[in-house]
Amino acid sequence: MPASPPSAAVVDLLGALAYGELSAFDHLADDAGLAPTLTARARMSEMAAVEFGHYQRLAERLIAIGADPEAAMAPFVAALETYHSLTKPSTWPESVVKAYVGDGLAADFYREVAAFLDADTRDLVIASLVDSGHSAFVVDRVRREIEQDARVAGPLALWGRRLMGEALSQAQRVVAERDSLASLLAGGVDRPGLDLAALGRMFTRLTENHCKRMDELGLAA
Image (cartoon, one colour):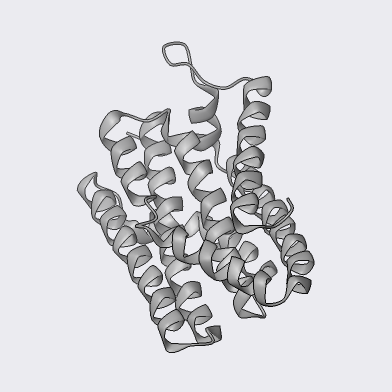
């Protein structure tokens, strides 16, 4: 028998999150090469390693519930790689802003969706989104860059807005293309969900959190 919508939604959500973590690992590892010092390179590589650890736990969970991780991730490759191709950093400051802002936006989105899952799956999703203290490193590095040259603040602020726009665009694309995720958000007879107004409020919260992150970096949203 085909999986019920909630079960399909769990596989989709875990698949999307797993590929997000695997892709983040790849791109963070590449971006580490832009670091101006070996210490900064090591920290960025450490962030990549954390992402890979999260991917492994999510893949293990997919196997435990009878799903094939590769098949579960496959539907989300295009959207996530489109995001990364459109937001490829060209400088070290851009790479650390992306690591902080882009990953933060993705984490907020998955936390919102996880609210509609069973407790065990929700706990796994939330655990995979912990930043392991790396945000402080990113905030410090970006603020240092601005202190050293105030002219970088304007371009980085524009970069942050671009990251926000592309992330929201791809998040909306994922929900629109995957009926199970749309059904998860919409709820059902015995399960509350989001109407259009509530969905709008969800994206407003994502935007508000983005503005807070930009403020922490010392950048205008």
